[in-house]
Amino acid sequence: MKNTGLLLVALLLAAPALPAQHPAVAREMAGVWLPDSKRSDRPPAWPLRPEAAASREQWLAEYGPVDPTIDDTNASCIAESMPWPVRLIAQYPFEVLFTADRVTVFHEVFGSLRRIPVGPAPYTFDALPSAMGTSSGRWEGDTLVVETRNIRRTGAGKPTGDVPVSNARRITERWSMGRDEDGNKQLRNELTIIDPVVLSEPVRYTMRYKWSPDIAVGEYLCQQDIWDQNLQGSPSSVPWRN
Amino acid sequence: MQTVRRAALVMLCSMGTLLALPAHAATPDISGTWLPVESLSTPWPDPLPLTESARQRYAAFDPDRDEPAAFCMPLGTPRNTLAGTSPLEVLQTDDRVYFVFQPNLLNAETRRVYLGKPLPAADPDRLPTWLGTSSGRWENNALVVETIEMEPQAILNGNGLSHLGGLKVRERWELANDPRRGRLLVNNLVLDDPATFTRPLQLKRVFAWAPDARLAEGQCSERLWIDQIWRNRLREHAAARKAGAK
Image (cartoon, rainbow over all chains, first blue to last red; front, side, top):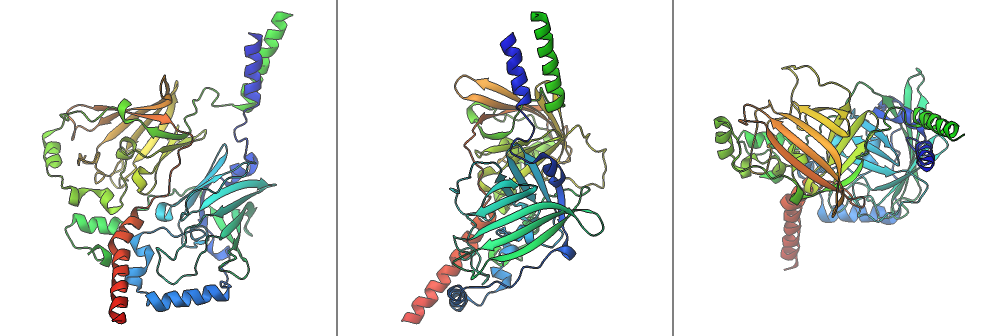
């Protein structure tokens, strides 16, 4: 009986709700946010290394010209890679959810989902490259620092002549809480993009987001048009479906 | 002395309960990743208890035309819960439980279940959604979930079983133990729709604890893209290059 009681006490006292998290900041950060386009930076021009710029030109010469009606991956509902969903200023909400040892970010656009394990142990980047990459998070004071690697290269599946992405690309995000000049709750994300193969120096900019408790992250039905046309018996207007 | 010590322990336990885990000391933890176990789950009954109109809809199903997943549309609720071999991820907090499905590398589908928030009153102007609107509550050790307003274009299984929008799904998610498979998450579902079923349909879907399972990123559009355009573009370029070399 005595042992059971002690065990219960130990279990109860040793089980805070968010052991790996920063509960006070997590409570503020959790919820639905919209990009604050007026208060966010625009990404600067990409400082391409000469080899990367030459490679891009060569690619365009070989495979161009780019036809946006066919080649735009957006039109084919392929999710854009990081950092696109966090640097987007179009008014697509995202939701931040904190659980015991993870942050999960649900983006409405493309239904993209980021899983960010948070904890003292270093996370191993052993997954295949993906649009959202592989992330790990840690708290530095009141700031949630998120490192992302294994970001899917755009060249193979996205022939639009965009800035190339190498396997060495990594993104550091510093998420913190603040207030805008009107006193409204604001989420900040200071991004640093490092890609030693492609970029001659790191690219840095800061995004800011508006607290949006009355907005829900909706279903992003990218293929709805094609599906509707199919149901109506009409041929698709998207070229690659014909 | 023994009594005093026991009383002190009881007090400490109570304080611990109040301080550390105020609202959910007895709430089961169903969070984590789970893999469906087909052999422990209930298959669709054969024959299905269908109304005449549902029987006609079922017979008219054309998989080439009427399968939303072929167009990268969601499976929708409850098909996402009942189908597929991919892991299920459950995220749980005090006020919500999210079920994340990624069936066969289709796009992720997150069923959001808000606890203690009643279902909205019927409103004919509100459109149904593919995942439906859900409300949940803990009843003893079971998470009871009610879902309404599911998009009727979302078929219920791969054979084209459909409803007309009046479907209600009741679920009881409970932990269990299996001597061979270990920790289980059992979902007993009731599909209720008088326009489709002659009686409420009971199904069971069982998941086994799979802490190492991971959900991959959906690749549905990529597969279509690669199949339909990129491969053709590569062929065109290869042909052009060959023609130029001659």
